[in-house]
Amino acid sequence: MEKPVVPQGIMTKCPRCGKPIYTKLLLKNLKTCECGYYFKVSAYERLAMIIDNNDFKEFDPQLFTRDPLDFPGYGDKLVKTQLQTGLVDGLVTGLGRIEGEPVMVGIMDSSFFMGSMGTAIGEKLTRMFERAIKEHLPVIIFTASGGARMQEGIFSLMQMAKVSAAAARHSEEGLLYITVLTDPTTGGVTASFAMLGDVILAEPGALIGFAGPRVIEQTIGQKLPEGFQRAEFLLEHGFVDRIVERHELKSTLGALLKLHRQHDLHKAEAMELAGNEPG
Image 1: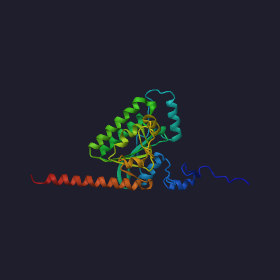
Image 2: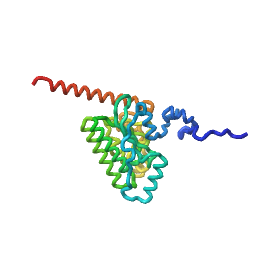
Image 3: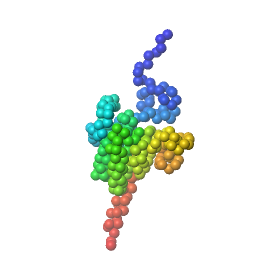
Image 4: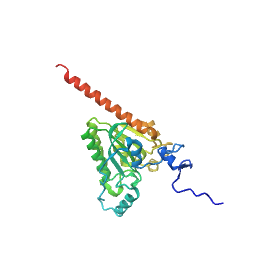
């Protein structure tokens, strides 16, 4: 008896529980399994999950690195990755609305060089913060990164300071900055703008840290606690404000944006009243 032929792509196997899932059902459930496993999502999949009516104005879609160090083989690998992913680099930035609230959004995509941060990503994030300052808008960044991109050396590391400085200028204007840490968020991204949010959210089970657990264990010569560097461990130790399930993320972000806008309105009214009081 011949085995039934299942069309390619109709089923997806969960890496954690091994259960086959109808791909359409998986997409309907925002790429989460019943066992609690979170599949990685692309930048554009993430946009479809959180942006109202998927109405998104993208910034700098053709901005890409020029291989500043002429790193051997890097140029060819960039082209190959661009063709495979359909991305120019590992970040999408732009303007959209979440629950009716206008917001600047940056989403890192781990399928592109493991979301590593190079010069193009640093420049795009900086430009996004500058636009947000000019238009007086909040910023949300979804992080997913293996850290700084080694093929760009010191130029990549410089982006940590560059983006952090842009975030600081945004903060000085009294504007809201939210980070959503997804799996994985590590290295130079964690050591800079990922942990600078006014509100820091994380997806369940996300790996968040600087060096990897194995490197730390080898360095200190000790076994790390169970669940070390996972979102739940960081929440328990005060590094994350809240862990949010993927299906609750849009409504949570919308509530935070509304709360901040109302605070701004009350502040403006109070300043106006103070200015009108008799001297």
